[in-house]
Image 1 (cartoon, helix red, strand yellow):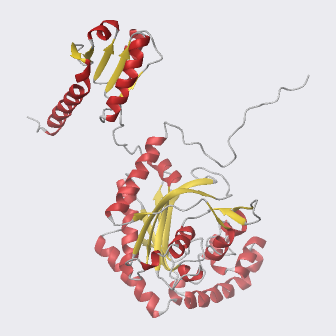
Image 2 (cartoon, helix red, strand yellow; image 1 turned 135 degrees about the vertical axis):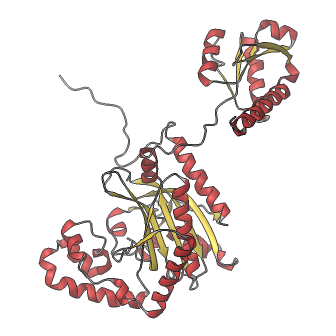
Length: 441
């Protein structure tokens, strides 16, 4: 006997459906992110999901895990090598150059949010399609810009009910990093037999990538490795000190992490990450960023200092739910429209649309015929008022308005129902506001 084939099409591995019950969390993060961007003068920008593969090779770096292992790249029907964006900054910089945003007053502050794609190993809070908020400031190399970005990132997480830790480091300028890379190679030379083949490749291609290896043996060796802070030029060191002074003035707590380098090659000078401590003592990274003063020129533009950061949605929301962060009150209907009969159903559908246009959030169950079922639906929704339109009301051109708190019903002329409902809802809102702000006796 042959087994019956499963005809169900399942979710692609590493992807995630965001169901209606999850949406309030996502809406909360999106709205807070947008509001914060506006308050700091960041303008919204959107970029395509597909970009030329070479954009990420040139920006993120050939020796990175992202380019070597994690990109969703393919040759399209036009024989062009394209990639689903694995990170946002490169696309934002490409748009900045291509559309002449360089001619705007500096710094150009840009805000972005959307999905990204990496063929990473799926785990808790990490998916192959994931969402981020990005804040980028282009055209200003002052340390205050770095500090403001850290302030925004820290403030966003605080507004979302979390208590993050800022880890910060400076990876200096290109010459500083070249000196440091040589020191790393010298340090690991007598220890090569303790390294995996994968880490040996990293050491050869880009020694900085050894510092963010997840292999436990390497992490132990890294503890005694040279620190980049000892290889910073005077200029880079002064810049870093100024950033820290700004953070001290802003009273933003931070931890100096000399091993922090970030996973993308375009960073220089300031780099930072935001972490949360969980109940078991483990750590969870929400995101991070830093300065990338060479990237605009690297992608074909004029030399332009820049800095930015990104925060991931999935881990952030996972932590918010664990911490029982309260969500803003849900936007629920205040009015339920009930009808009896086919003719009244048509008129109620039109009334429902008139209420919506007037800014009244209403609900209905027009597919139901019985008043009992409809009133049960109104009770479940906990609406303030129910409008009942039956055969008698149709003949009289009136409608019943039922107060769901006390059960009192009134007859209202049909043509006056929308302004009457608005007036009563406004009156109820005023009463609720007054009672919530009145001092206790």
